[in-house]
Length: 212
Image (cartoon, rainbow, N blue to C red; front, side, top):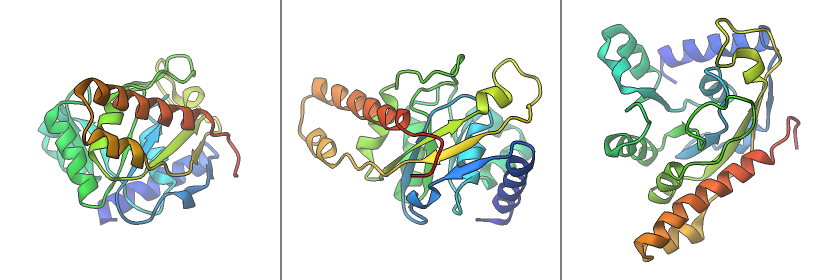
């Protein structure tokens, strides 16, 4: 971790431990080095730093491209390994930036649902994460956060001191689907992207707030 990232990581860990009384389950399932995709459900702005704070390695985050136009904010985001993406989090440039980080051996957090849940229920996965998975060789670790909607949901102005937790699942490799994607038709390729996304979401749904 660079100094700026370490400072932010330490502050978030302290906040989660004291104000939110967090629990972290099975962080050892995430490789400490090498590329990895962390695929998490999404309920709150608390989620990205929560997923990263539970690990003893730095990870890459997605941030809206427009934020990088502000010199100070942009500098901080870059020092925190933020990847600039457009409003929808996609686009060719955004995908290339994500794949570049993975090819460099980085870890990156992605949200298969694409947006925060409004009611706490898991949402259907979008195919975009499947495309990213197929075009990379990185293992995928399903992640589930608990309690963040109650702590800082969409309509809250300030976070509430509710208990939160994060759990890391066992890595998924998708070796067979990656191999099939090399030679299949375009129609089948689209099916593969969605199949990967759905399998990731299913793995997330099976995670429970306790250590295995």
